[in-house]
Length: 242
Image (cartoon, rainbow, N blue to C red; front, side):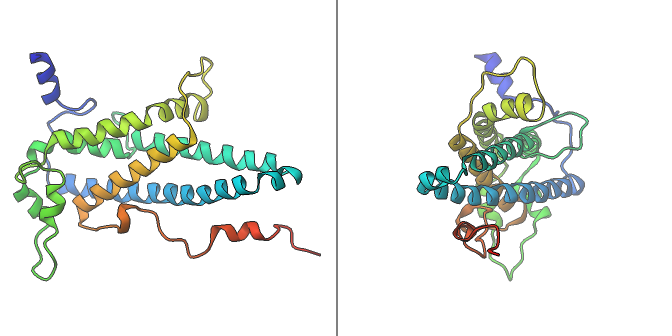
């Protein structure tokens, strides 16, 4: 039991507790959040359009088969699945002495420095503005149990859930998509599991964007409303008549 407690209080694997959280570190984390947001927003928007594609295919399966469209459907499905696997892998990878940014790497660093992140320090990075609603209390409170200092336990829960949801997808991406591993893998992941993982990362990113910047997102998602109906392309042939 003692060893278990000691392990829980130690640094999250991969990083030490020696980093001092100052303006430079905070700026770095803000830049990471911006990159993560851009990458995941593209993935979530692609997923939304692929959901429409799946729906159209399911509703018109007999017609598609009768017109020899099955191979094209398989091509699109296989291509998007590979894209989804790599999108998930990109957000969970951590390597020492590497400049690669990922959601898990960001959360790992914040978790290891949680003891430094007091509310007073947070206000130094995000000073109050009398003309704007004081969002800092709510944003900080989402990651703090006592509202005085960031709770490593709360961030660790986010990390554990992210790793749990992405474990199979990461292994498949490593051994079958990014590399051709002779041994292969027994890991399996359905499309719905990929979907759930991407949307969970989506909500996590929105949560940490709020913490770092105060910016809120409608429906707690990075997904944007498309300015067109994705089904429209399927209502017309791709080859123009004549």
